Length: 448
Image 1: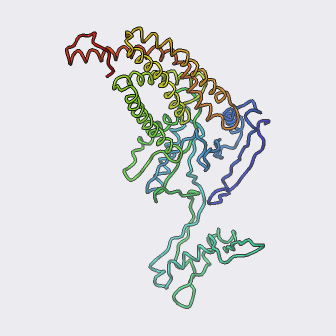
Image 2: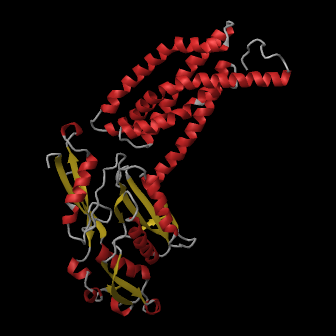
Image 3: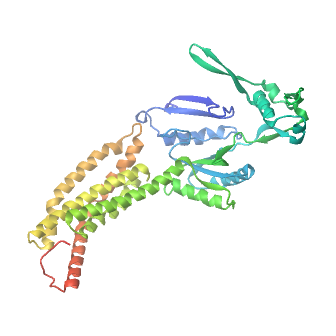
């Protein structure tokens, strides 16, 4: 494929050095030098390459995480189920995985629970071991030395130090009969054969047992396809419903993990940021206009920009994420600035004795040119970020796209809505004043 610059194959690149796990890192050429996007190339691999692989292989296509680690890209979902029984976790995970594959917009469903690894079990007869004077720790150390291996010394060469580990050869440490010939030191003078105090057996178990808060866990992962109405939160909600159907007891825990968990925290943090932004903007505007109602005139225009901002994302083919939420904060600042220009000039004209209707029309006429000039300059400055297609351009596109679309489409509405809201609140002020003081409706103008 011409879009691929090079690939890198690694085998056993994990903490367990598992030989049955491999990954292929694919480095693409720069986005400006290829016709297909990264998502399109990944989709092409799923459709053309994966069906040709043997069915016993568990393969998934993942993005490289932009923040490091091995949790997959920002479009992935991670979900964890933890509890005391590994057998119960395995049963639940298999059922949940089967149901997850039916969710719309989900793909590459997998888990980190890989059963079927052959292992030799050792069951100690503690009463017999005690009678023969065998310490359990000595038995464990002997097996760990010959089967698992222990560091016995170090080796220095050319300023570098290397560990020397000792263990039995593979043909001996994987044979039950050979292991039974091992001798265990005892408190007596004669070593004891291993078969006299233990019972060896063979079974299959998981390749790796992961733990969360000292409890066994199984992690589920999946990728999300692009499309209308498909988001990470909708996938997580679907997984949550599937897990609830398994009727897990109270000593089991389930929930988002890794990037999915952090993105959930980020969403709540953004909601708090928006709330505080509205509060601080209201207080600053109240101090500027020396009024408690005129700031509402400006702030009411901000929700009007949301539909146009989302429409702009739809037209540009983007999604609502962390970076577009940052652009939404910038969009609110620009819309608020336009309202300040209109209302401030209107108040100045009315303070000079001009009637309200004439002041509103003249203020809009005087401030139309600076509003259009600043808006056009701001949108023009964002267009290069929207049109960028270099490395990391997706983040810039999401931030600038919501600003360009929202500001361009909502400009006319905000220019019309602010005079309407201003007139409504001014009538409300007059009505409250007349209600409280029973004064004439044509009393002198005063900002409340």
